[in-house]
Image 1 (cartoon, rainbow, N blue to C red):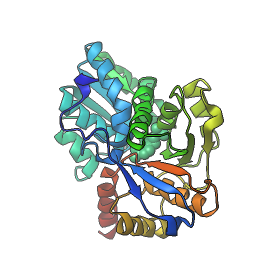
Image 2: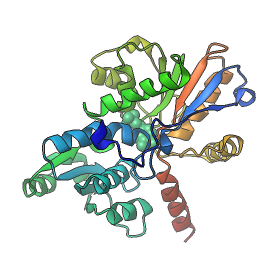
Image 3: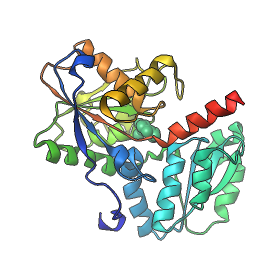
Image 4: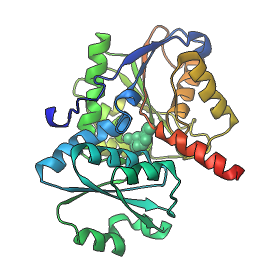
Length: 309
Ligand SMILES: Cc1ncc(COP(=O)(O)O)c(C=O)c1O
């Protein structure tokens, strides 16, 4: 879409081969789709999910993007970045307390996002909260985007990953592997009309129903190609341990690629573990979609420093 194709975007995002056959203990051809490289402000699945939401916002003449997120949210960061790039005002409704030094919130503020802090109870109510209702009723031309950015307009942008990968490889990969929270990115992939690849989803949080939620988003399209592996959440959302942090370091040493501790490291760890267990057919082509989230590493560093005092 020309209007939202900013000249500084790295698109199509690179598809890079990674030789980890020794580590994976299996003869697979592994590639990483580097959506994390699209743009420092708007990258990974946030670029994919926001692309058509921004187009929609322009079409309806919205002037302010409003959204929700936690205080280290990749989505909040991306909406602030996109708003600055495309000339929208933006409002972030944040779960938790104000913190001037938090790098995610600082970035948002520097991009012009107005931040409001909600208690957990209020936050849970989302647009049903009296505070949010009142705020929205006083803004002309606002477009409300859901937490995490998953809605119907998010899916077509995610689907385009497959077009890019097929063009770059010259064939359909056997497997596309990715992290998940709401499952919106995976749902977008599944709506690709002539999908030939299996979609392997590794949730970053404890979730017993993600498969059903993804199917609800796609209207049941291509469900037979979807596998959800729930074994790699490392205790739950934003939880991590020494094993995961060492993995991030090792992986970077071997490949030069950074992974974030909330989403992509868990998914890549899972991919390699599954490969070692013979999950993927020998000789198959496996594409890992790097969904971004690297801004969160600054947040992690900040929290670690804060704990140290
Ligand atoms: C870096 C990263 N990867 C993966 C996900 C999960 O994406 P989805 O909610 O579409 O499953 C998110 C959250 O949106 C994210 O920020």
